[in-house]
Image (cartoon, rainbow, N blue to C red; front, side):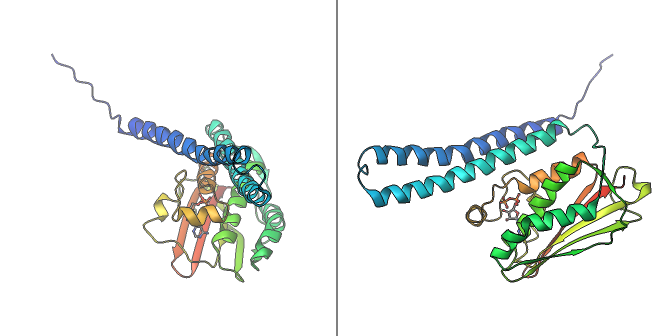
Length: 253
Ligand code: ADP
């Protein structure tokens, strides 16, 4: 008698590779600004010691790099916090119209810088969602921030919420329906080949552009993990030249 045990380890290997890539990317992202600091500090201690103009320029660049590092570390911490809680279902009842209002008012000044208006479309009698208030607030903030960054100047962002009776996806307690939250922008849109990869950590369609608008490449990974923890769903639709719609489905409370 010969017994053969076969295990499919492709999933384990894939997860392991993602973890290794993630550490490599995160280290690289943090190392780059640090190298700039070291170079500038040495220059300011030596050759540019008395050069007031160089000092101002270098300090300005160092400030921008430090701000970027701070955003990166904050995003990394948020991501690991969500991942740590991945296996416990959130338990708050969340008032979605209030969440939309709060997000819109927080980001209105940023939108106004680009003359973008945020419009809210939802009824106040919407059922409450089952979720974690803080995590959902961060995820929505990321989606609307992206809409502001990648939307056209002088355009409109529409933030809407609706009840869906028969959600298609594998949503927790789906017989009770789901809450659908959509963030729609009027921007350049995203080419179809990029869409499946957008939620990967550090994935950027255009790294230079993302960096210029203050991106870290982690915003949508945070959204994806939040939605996953909520046992909801995320859908991304985009028409090139017109704009994109990011839709989050959440279970009802
Ligand atoms: P980033 O910090 O680079 O914005 P994200 O994870 O939030 O990182 O988004 C990943 C990439 O997806 C972005 O670099 C951008 O190319 C693309 N993207 C995200 N949101 C939008 C949007 N609303 N319109 C167009 N492209 C978008």
